Length: 471
Image (cartoon, rainbow, N blue to C red; front, side, top):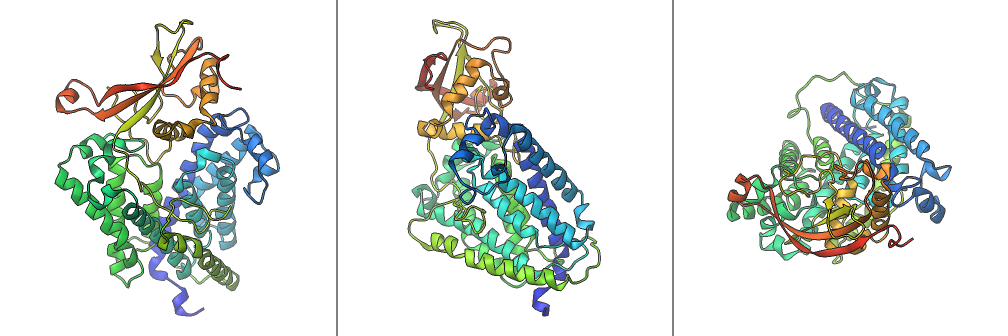
């Protein structure tokens, strides 16, 4: 291959990018171990076996079409934990090229198998983003080989789609992004606020407008500079990293920010990243041909996301194929102005007249005196879906009755998803779902210990026993 193919000055970039993607894989597999069974396991809220019976392999490729059981899910997730831990610790980077390729490909297949049967719980854009980034890292090669430039270009193209797609969906979506008032609301109404979200929300209005302007610049202008000569690309990558760190501080967006930072490092050369790395040699011809074939395939898949970005009816976070490659991305095209929260309560009083106590979920606002926790880059899937239910109850139509039934039965799997179960000994006789309006406490209220102030917005589901719930 000619000199255009090799990128020895990006050896440090390759190391950082691969280690961060391995860290996100580890988060994803640990998350599956802790949450998949109660959400989508054999007896979960949306059971995977039922889903597998309804869809074929071509529509949803997964190892679990061979056989699904909760034990098999555990084996796949634990295998992913071991492989991603080895990659994070640098063990995989010392392997021969063929072994590196097989290990990273195995991680991608294992996580794809989980995502493709995860249904609504795995319908977030950062799942596809992890799969697409993880697939490209397969072809970067270990530390003792020279990084192939086509793979680095593809990683930058992926980052471009993440940033530019998000910028376009904002401009085309809610008017508050165009009049620069989006952050007057977003820090308070985002799905899962963090410990500093109240501070960001209470910043002066002009600073909020400056934040929005900076966001537009980072997402609509800076991504083009990723393909410019150095050091311009370095500057663009640093700006994206700084913006993502700002987002990490202001809210909890699972691993979206971390994996975006990982992609930004792919654009940084050794003038910016100065740490020792092993000497490298060119990879063999079979690997060079494989990289070019993959690059050609990814370019062919670029048609759909490009058409989506330039079209009038742009959608965000869409996978155009079952392998989650060549996706389109974006976030918060619409910003809600008022925060509503679903609060689930139970009582041991069969009449339902007294004794109502609240269930608490990790990450999700509930107790007004509880500080919003820092959970990202971890992801609490049920808490995110309950935020959507507060906006439109239809989001919970397929699983919320099953959740309530599990609470009425004292299901131990469901209790794993809770921060606090108010009925540790005996399950409640009745449960109900209420809706509240939440807003951040002002200074005086905060000095009295409150983080939120809430007012009742009615009842979403009236008091029910197991006999009242639909089958």
